[in-house]
Image (cartoon, rainbow, N blue to C red):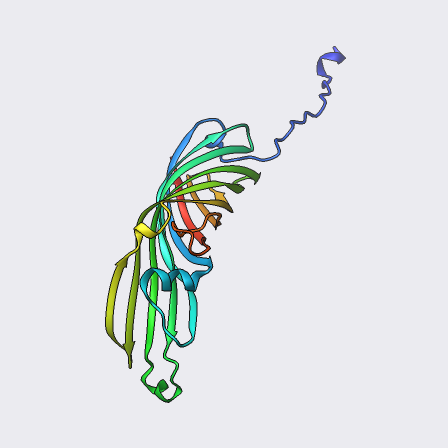
Length: 230
């Protein structure tokens, strides 16, 4: 009689938690998506010589180098290999290059604000193969190799004074650039449960851009953007 009212003691149960918890829908299934964002690019190495050789842009005054803004957009596939690791190949259209600004070497004419601007306007199809490691739920680091195929290469030269553009011309320099550029890509990001994601990264060019080996210059790209996985 008394035993029927007794409460049976139960031991507390514990479940082992994985080292990370990716978005639930991405743990096992292959996911596809698209991405896009801002590129801020530069050319390191003989950047000034690169442009003067390609476009005949050779001001005798001071030359300053600036990063060129652009954009990237493309698609990708995320291939999970366990709970915290994935391989992510992709294809992106990406704008790269650099901006050089030169002034005339005549102090007496500074009031004219005369200047020459040269812009390397390069466009590539990037094909990265990235390894992604999820450190915490949603947050990941990535790194991997990238091959970039030249789509378009132009050098734009503009000259002006007093705020007006007096000269502007584009030169096609595609045949003087390597058709394939190899780089190392790395960065970080956050993937939300609803498929939206944020990322930022850096592409470090490994090969020289000049097809004729006259100078040594490599692409450098800082990127930040959004992605959506479905």
